[in-house]
Length: 265
Image 1 (cartoon, rainbow, N blue to C red):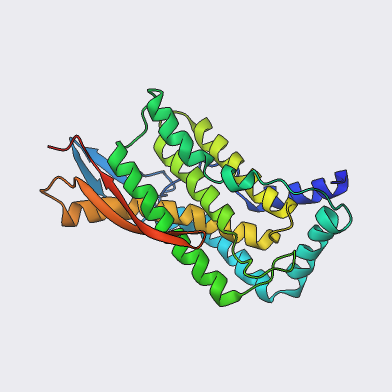
Image 2: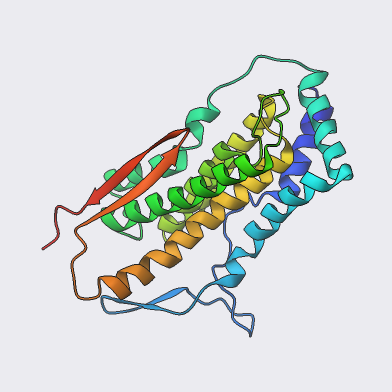
């Protein structure tokens, strides 16, 4: 890839994707930060839906949708493709197929190494599964509806599923370790951004696919982290939720995943 192409690509991504993952979960009317949940002993108290924490991912998704009908933004997509692929054809790199899961794998690896995250194995696993249900349902529905052609001529480009998974995993890592160190979140988002860049480098997605996918991934994990305590409080208030079954769909394969807490009493 030429230096000019690399510069255009990085500037585009840096202006749209939130590589620095330290988003504020909620902002009060006075401008002071406020936690989504407060802890009173062992009880988690919900403080309402964190609308403002969804502004950035919503804008990213909106950018992707706007591109579908904007000739100017479509031309920008084409210019990037020309610089990255048409004028500089190259061998594809397939590490993005695995890199998308790296931040989520890091969560479990860090816990195994003794660096504890915010939640226990059961709770974090359920929230990660919920996030994947949300993002896959959204991504595959939009692919079927929009039927946007990929840069390489194949179908169903919008939005990028790999990028959605990568940013959902990055937000998962951030949520679990933001109280330990902000660098975990930054590393996760850097990995997710690399995944999105590789999807463009491999001529599989337009910039707008990447940006929308990233927004969907971030929003899916944020929604899971907000919704799970609501479900747990309202439906399992006085019960130990030892197991939970959830459907999933990934890369044209579906099934049911179960998370079981072996240490529940």
